[in-house]
Amino acid sequence: MWPTPAPTTPVWPTPAPTTPVWPTPAPTVAPTTPKWPTPAPTTAPTPEPVPQTCWHHYFSTRKGLGRCPGGMVALPGGTACSSYDECEDVCCDPAPTTPVWPTPAPTTAPPVWPTPAPTTRGHANDPHAEGHANDPHAEGHANDPHAGGHAEWPTPAPTTAPPVWPTPAPTTPVWPTPAPTPEPVPENCWHRFFKDRLKQGLDRCDAGQQAYPGGVACTNEADCAEACCFDPKPLQNKCWDLLYKDRLANGQARCPTGITMPGGTVCGSKEECETVCCVIETTVSGW
Image (cartoon, rainbow, N blue to C red):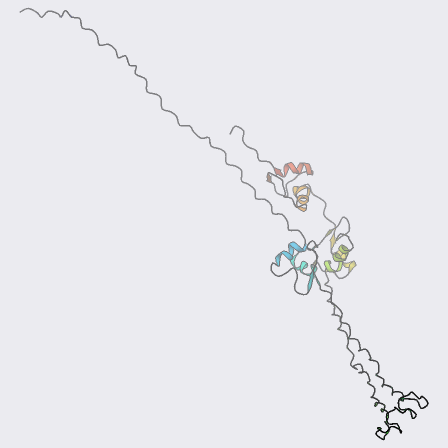
């Protein structure tokens, strides 16, 4: 048995594929959002103080009732007062009363005089007078055949009317209405001291002094000058005395911007307090 002869046709190797196989891409990393720092808490603004005037302490609370009770006159809304009770006394004045004059007595009417009697008709010596004896045409003449045979009597004088006397004035006098009794002046700083000084264009207290509330008790001008005014304490090196106090008095907030520090925070001057007492918020760099 002969062996199988080797094939004469060469066997070619399988060619490598021509389409390149791309490597699997690495997974895409999702972008991460940077975490921002928590902002500092916002400090609530300090409420502005209520101005010490009639409008803010009294008139604005009487909505629908009128500025003052009936029969009283309201002063200007900018009149100074420090509390509701004080403003109730200060801001309303009693209405002025009009005096009632007595009724004058009636005017006396002039008397009515009687009418004088008429003058006698016809003169005895006047030939042309009516009813003369020598006038043949006179009515009732003796030679007139048509005369009635009797003489005409003169018209009698009218009866004198009694005089009309004027009506006498009433004997009961009409007295004027008495003026109302003024109310007593309350014994406190407003009525006994501050009110008169403000009318004169002065401050409540002398220069350099500060005023207590108007309801503080005092009896006369000398007593009130001591009881109602006091010397202020010297300023201390802290935010309240050197910065906050003046800003609030001018109707401003304690700080224009930033975080407000406590009023007892120490600072040496107004310029330093503006930096120390009102802290500007800063952001962390790189975020």
